Amino acid sequence: MTIAQKILAKKSGRKEVHPGELITAKVDVAMANDVTAPLAIKLFKKYRIKKVFDPEKVILVLSHFLPAKDILSAEQAKMVREFAKEQGIKWFFEEGEGIEHTLLPEKGLVLPGDLVVGADSHTCTYGALGAFSTGVGSTDIAYAFATGEIWLKVPQTIRFNFYGRLKPFVMGKDLILYTIGQIGVDGALYKVMEFGGETIRSLSIEQRLTITNMAVEAGAKTGIIEPDETTLEYVSKRAKRPYRIYKSDEDANYSEIYEWDVSNLEPLVAHPYLPSNVKSVWESTDVKIDQAFIGSCTNGRIEDLRVAAQILKGRKVHKDVRCIVIPASKGVYIQALKEGLIDIFLDAGCIVSPSTCGPCLGGHMGVLAEGEVCVSTSNRNFPGRMGHPKSKSYLANPAVVAASAVMGRIAHPEEVVGKALIS
Image (cartoon, rainbow, N blue to C red; front, side, top):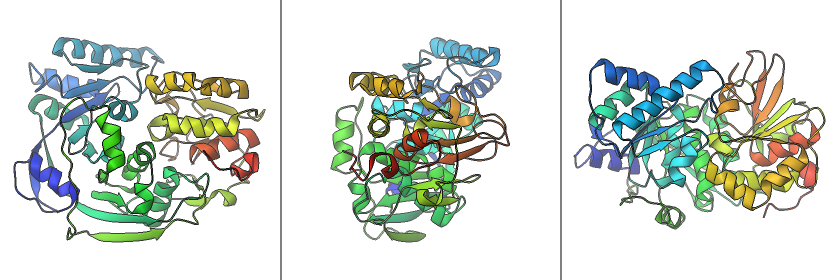
């Protein structure tokens, strides 16, 4: 079996499961945020359910429209706060604590071998730790809150093997953009994307989290990476409970296997209006920008901010560009302060915000006007995703976004700092 099948078999109390089977499985974590939790809470109360199945396994995070941007978002946050208090939810995170997909790994709340469901499509992020983690709707999350269970169809798995040493300024973001560019936004529809190979093993957990975060952009049920020494080093410092390591069998059955040498890969940019519309950064340097966004659950972690700061240090954001930097959690913000990164961003002319999803979904703290162009480290660039339906969003890694902020157009980092290595 694959790692995904092994986890689902364990959680459904079976020796083995096969693609296409419908199963009911016990979850280790059920998560919702300020946008999706209110719908689940209303259902919870409609059916007069008294208690969540386990107040230590239900996680609630206020992350999307925070600090509250209007009365509606304030009311949503209030409903979640009150529910968390009356249910005695242990892991309730107030506004400013962080974006769930950075916060939960950081706090050791999602672990290898877990089955995690979250009422947010990018819940697939946690697969970087070797968990089966998937997004569900608010109705499903209400059911999980009440019963601790979820039903799903066992998905097939596609294996992606990456080989070669990455060039300077090429990051995990580029690997997943390359993948989506190759297979399309429906290329892994309701399948598991299992990532491996020497290139993946060389990456930090933060880079891996970026890759699995965007698995859903290829239509996947989840993305997953087998735990290794890097994983164990990361989770051993953070884990709040025991966990179990699963790995795919050598004779595991994959629906497809892709093998790619990425040693010559350049930084990539996803052009509007699909994450699969991928081009080299060198093919994108004629695109002038109005805004640069460094943040989100995709690339707002401390390594991302370090990379961006290396590009921006001693330089200024272009006079025609707004550069918004949003650390993805309070922990990331504090570390960035300690390292002097926030000073670098402010000196360069950036706007630095408390942790929020805001700009990524065109909701808050950086909404685009008609005709405006943004280059962003986030994960989606559909029409209207970051604001006006006639605005445009380009997706890239933090080094490219920082360089673009300086140049006033999409730029390769080499154009700003030369061919120096990112240390």
